[in-house]
Length: 182
Image (cartoon, rainbow, N blue to C red; front, side):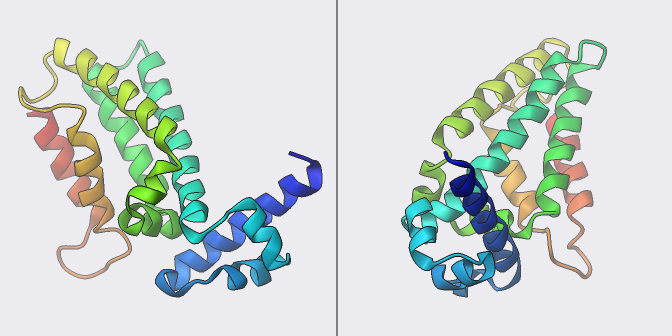
């Protein structure tokens, strides 16, 4: 990608993050263009529709998730169960600070996630490796599987951005981690 195209791409994503963090369902591509300071045609050249734009937010987030899972796998000094739990905590914190991507994760559907298929598959491979390691060390509940992680994290994600009694995402995450550990 040329330097000017890369700058526009980044400006579009930054604008989308701001807008989706505010009033996500009503965000239109022309609003993203205005906020990014580019023409709507430029937005459509980079992202043919809103799902593609949301998909890029999801893809980027999965890349970050995967960096953390790789680091957990490479941490030979950590207990395997702790390494997995800490990676999940870090990933949850990243989502808590990113309302736009939370919106994309929670409402995007298959078309949005299709843009992150390779990263999502890598996530599952890394998660499976971490789960196998923790299971061998006897640090996971017998029935816990890597396939449980996306459901667990979506549950935690659904409590983020809410306030009031019963809406503490950190507590929800710790309860889920304890359940995972058995």
